[in-house]
Image: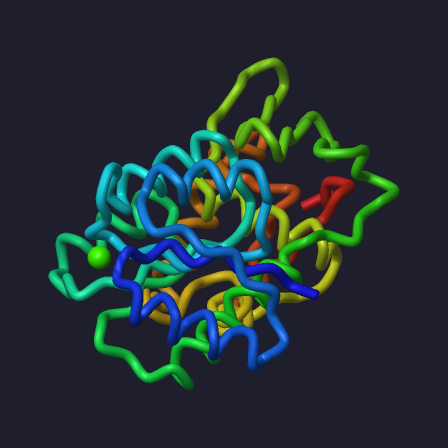
Length: 237
Ligand code: CA
């Protein structure tokens, strides 16, 4: 049973969320302020967090930042009446998986929660032979998923959450030709309104970190007219 943590100070909304989630078969944990929410998230390790922004004691952004610093892997969906562009961007920069503006329909919330959970499940790579605990190795690269970083031929690079998710996806689909639209729908959050150009930009960023020569990639290769292919053993091209 998936466990969802609801961090919301407004009792009626918290109750409505709790009821709707329980009706869908989720186990629900509740917190009425930011500090309780953060403590509960770190202690209980929920499968997803619904997070209000305007909270007593500790605001939602501060909770989110602390969760990501503690490397909570669960998706976090921000629920906020503040729909301003600035807040949305801030939320995604701090590592939110989705941003839902109040008032929202319960049905929409459940759909978006389901999508966030599915994305997270799909992002778990099935590359056991190359992956040892939270590390993966290929070529001259060692990825540390817990530390959000990799070491490429002795040089350490930090990875953003998105870069880590993209790399995880490539590792899980090693050898497959992946078109840009599939990458967009499987890795990106639709509410970020990404474009195929977004995919290219992030592939370029990843290449700078994983390739010996980013201008002549041998792991993350372009398949002209389609998209990309990730190869554990470097291609001879
Ligand atoms: Ca509130």
